[in-house]
Length: 253
Image 1 (spheres, rainbow, N blue to C red):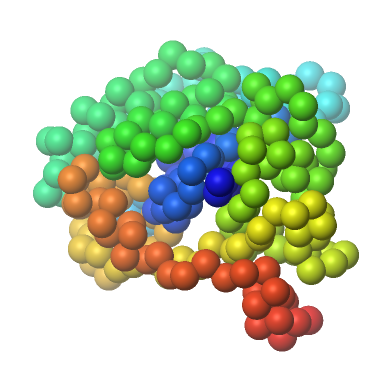
Image 2: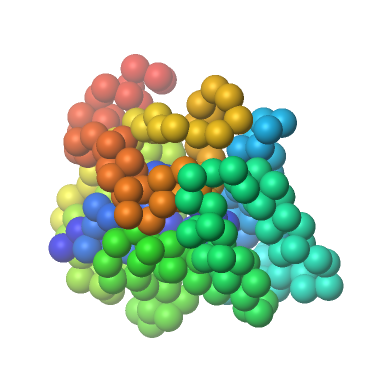
């Protein structure tokens, strides 16, 4: 059984949905620290002036305790949803699938959900469904028998949900591979592969192609029926942890 584990980020890019589509079970890591000014709370759209960030404002936290996804509140006093929708409308009103997609985006962003993780997860779930991706989606905060940090936490989650194959994003190799090949995952008999994705080019508005936009950019340009095909065009064969370590990490060190 194959799984992947990721933070629930705000209106993610194409590769996030390709990761979900490649596994049997996908876990939202919603019980860990939120980092401001990262993809946790923001993403990009393409406008006639170039790319711009849309950022979700958070309630101020009292004290010095860390913000945890499933405990962090969105600042509902700011009219940020209205501003995001207006920016999206202006950017994509001439897109081929604007009339089809914009009401869908309105529904996503006008949610009354105040917890950051729940807000982001709702978006990801609904976009996945609209793309035709049907996988088991799980919240880490609802798992009872998990513990540890970094790759120990990944092992704990894999065991709890009954998965023996972990598909990791390449950015996690730094801590997974730090002490030994495959880290705690391979030590615990879990096959470790790294996702290999080459961002596909597709028709966009507003001049030259810009990669790594939010999924909304693709949806407005290709609609619900064709977007998953575009996403899959970037998929390459996953890389086993030994090959990744030998061909990437060792060369870079």
